[in-house]
Amino acid sequence: MKSLDDVISTCKLSLNAQNSESIFRSAADRDFAISVLDGHIWKGSKIEAKIARPHADPLMKRRAESEIKSELLSKEQHIDWLSEPVDLEKAHETLRDSILPLWRLNYDPDQLIEKRNLVLKYLAETRRRLLLINPEIGNVDSVKFVEESDSKGQTTICKLAPIIPSPIQTEYRNKSELTIGYDVDGSGPVIGFRYSKYKGGSVAVGSFKSWNFMPRNSTKVIDALQEFITACSKREFKKLPSLNAFDPITYNGNWRHVLIRESRSGDTLVVLYTNTYGFTEEDINNLLNELRTWFQTGPGSDSGLTSLYLSVSSRSGIKQSGEDLRQVFGKPYIIEQCCGLNFHISISAFFQVNTLAAELLFERISCLCNLPSKNQITCTNENLNEKKRILLDVCCGTGTIALCLSKHFDRVIGIDMCNSAIEDAKSNAELNDIQNVEFFAGKAENILRNTIDSLPEGCDLSVVVDPPRAGLHHSVIQLLRNCKQIQRIIYISCNIEYAVENFLNFARPCSKKFTGIPFVPTMAEAVDLFPQTLHSEVILLLERIPSIP
Image (cartoon, rainbow, N blue to C red; front, side, top):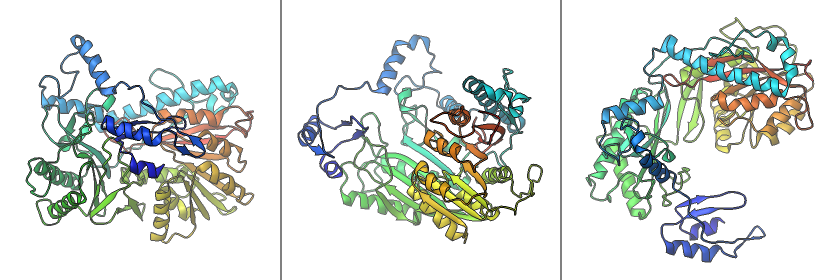
């Protein structure tokens, strides 16, 4: 299939198990692809290729709906740079309200109250839905006598501790992803943030300059990159063709988006994602040279940028995956300091975006694992040396939690399905000379079976799960429930709304599908890693309740 991919020129490809759809730049490209694919044998199956019915473009559909309802919408509600001129300052304020909905409120207590109320809402929803699928849980003391409720007076599944505030409320993000496009008034190219998703009816981009969640060094670097992109649009570089922002409607244009990472040690890394359809190799090399000159000896040399990479793609309609990265200068990673350790963070690796608040998060996880900590209020040291202590970190990413907690355990095992993240985790263990950790790449449900079977009987096992936004796969939950050695699980959620389904599966009555005594949320804490937004990182302690069938 990859060899066919090199022959067929497609600008957008959608794949699934039974059917795939592709968009082409011309009827000639489409007809050629059909002639190549139709009848082709792939994995023992014969491919049928034909012209598909066109789907309604979500942006055009939304615009058509907006035109029909235009008499019901005010100009303030409908932001679109293709429509009538708008107040640019007001548009930027609307964008800020969308991305940072709490920025107008005092941080403490107002923002923290809003965040706490949101967590309480989903803890109450968890209780309501849990009692429907497993009514016996209502007789458990830890559930029966909860004296916590949401804003509507609905009792929560467990007590929520006071939210832990972020040490800093501005300039806290060590990673940001920005889009390049045109503003609501048509000016640009602009580096910033979309006013809405594509299907929301607008492709306009507001400038990053009014935002205060990026550190100053990152802002300085993006300023320098903005100047470079502006110079390119004005044809100030003789060896470069005219370069403009990518248009997701026509697939024309070049600049797509920007990834920037910054560490407390002073490293700053940028990846500039581009569409280079129609470029020669000489054009790409000229662009690399101009970028290198701009940031090393030119106007951007005082920005402090330490690493720059260019992602090139000749397939304009496909989301960039970064596989074709060209080095401009520097290393493809930064070194961040957290909990007294150094972490090697590559371009695509996951790392908490607020390092100072992440340290508080890891301290709370340490306490819930019943480990020594600076905060001794909820931590005990009884019987710590009686059994071999093992930490199982599911969805470990670059190994941050596993490594930060490793000094408290005899053995630490980290599992993640992302190969590059595991490579980073191994590098981080070596970088910090930590010997008692092991990291495995693959699906958690596959590795867990062998890992759990190899654990010594009677060990003191702590399990931490830090899944992606969508939560754990149900097969992982089944394995964890079925392991009798696991008595408590520390579940970390960056979006508790999506995690509710996981909590329900952990607490369902025993069945052929979900064996093992259920786990019930008995305590919750929230740490604010995302000031000015509604989001927070939520830690839930899930414990087995033997009295529940």
